[in-house]
Image (cartoon, rainbow, N blue to C red; front, side, top):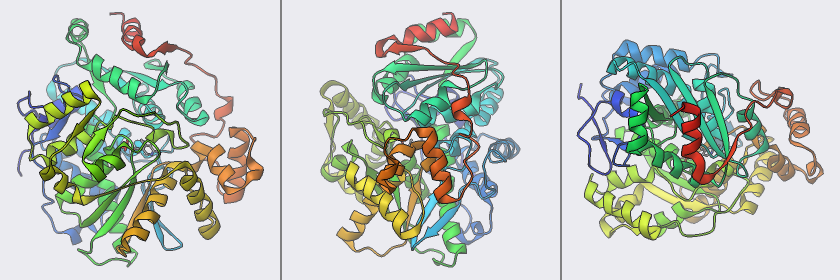
Length: 496
Ligand SMILES: *Cc1c(COP(=O)(O)O)cnc(C)c1O
């Protein structure tokens, strides 16, 4: 089997193993680790069709993580995709009134982040063992709401780790916030910052590349890593469910082997959709990856003009996990579409840093054909929830609604009849105020916990275990800080 190595998108890194890339999180030059080639699936597509989620995960992931022993990977996969998920399907594809939804929210924290964050701690622990460095891992995480809780859940009480999460005080839903601040486990730290997700992510990136701080940490025999999708260990597990959606469509009898399909992906940091792009590169028959943005439509503008411009107002929307103006993983796409030209990436990132924008050339623009960019306004999003409820009696969350709404625009514009899977990233239970008021105005004004009960009533489904009693759990994390105080908070926690 071909060995896969990992390099920085910005060039200053010789190829490292996946274990090293995963344990470090971010390259020292500020670039993101990328596989130097995307492996091709080396078995026939039809052989995947009977595999369950775990078997498929092993088949896909071993192509990327070539330095992990097969037994090591198997163990990680078995520990990750178990009863923590409320269905043995792990990621069921459901058909509702002719639309396909890939439900990625059956994990413990009710959002798609569990798909990767239930396995990342195991990949990381195995990596540390493989590298034989015996260091304590300090996991730094910025969150727009869902990564934080999923990472806390994954790393709580994991020996040899500390997990520190920064979330925007004003930028997450009430349920998301409660999930995080009630987290138990002596190794967990949750801090609200006075800023938005971009501020939190920038702070984390700065800290991860601060030589002075890294040295002090080294003296304590500790090292930083990250649970954000800048960590390649977050992305690779996500490739799996694109294949899994395909096998389910086939098993429903709705496609033939080799038939192309589309995915509509609600996008923020470009991690989820990039995993879809990697799946396509591996050989999954994907026609279009529909990149669905909310009103923070930097990606829509980029795909349609070739110019990325973050200088604009940050909009707080009803899909807060996509309220992002600096889409980190786009840097990995640029690496691919520039023909792995790290000089080009370095310059583009410098432009972004200095001028707040960059422009790609026409050759790179041509490479964006795999994508369609669209966006949904707040009104579109709310209407999508109403429409799906009315036509299918099925409740979708505000993020899934963005991908549904953008798919409708795509359909109207292109008349493309290719079967399309809507990537469903969160349970409606996490965003009840906006979901329920889109269903019926009579729910306006009820509090989140009352709405949870109402939602359970209209769907006839039990309240998911992850949030039942959430209002009764004690608040254990109360720290808040300014956005430029993140480093100080870390020094305090770690006694540096
Ligand atoms: C994180 C998140 C997204 C965006 O995913 P990216 O990988 O950042 O593009 C969309 N929906 C939900 C519910 C999320 O938690």
